[in-house]
Length: 201
Image (tube, rainbow, N blue to C red):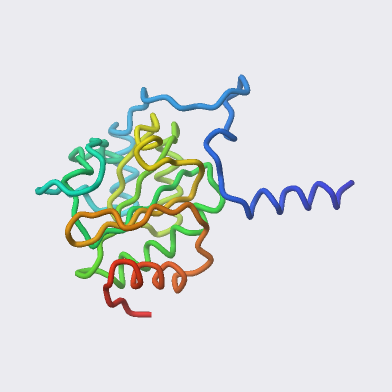
């Protein structure tokens, strides 16, 4: 019996997370937009983690016209105004594979500074404090916005997490993928190939 339980747990840890699989205490999925992601406590957590401020864009591109609040306080971001090269990481603190990927996105943020930007979207997550705790533990410092109500579900056809969205220099979305990256090298290879940028290994 222990072997069966261990096998099931291992399988769950390796598969992508689906927001539909995250029930509330009543057994139904939680997808509410009534989550305050800007409180004094959250601002303190964000500052402690060293997360950079959100940077709204200017000229409209190919991203959906959806405005999301900056996680832990800051300026709201209209995604449609963002241009690339940009890598958007769709994650949530309740998603196991998302947790393992965050350091790879941070490495991309650090090594690609001045070449490619990284933006995190805390998706369908009603626990912003836990998200910021995870961010701090993972060493993430790139800007983060929140989508607790799942506004991007239809726009990106989100069927599970983790997800990645690639945006080129003109603001065109070149890729929307739902996959688990096993290393920085794997993430880097996709970004180099699809966005045509040079990044250090």
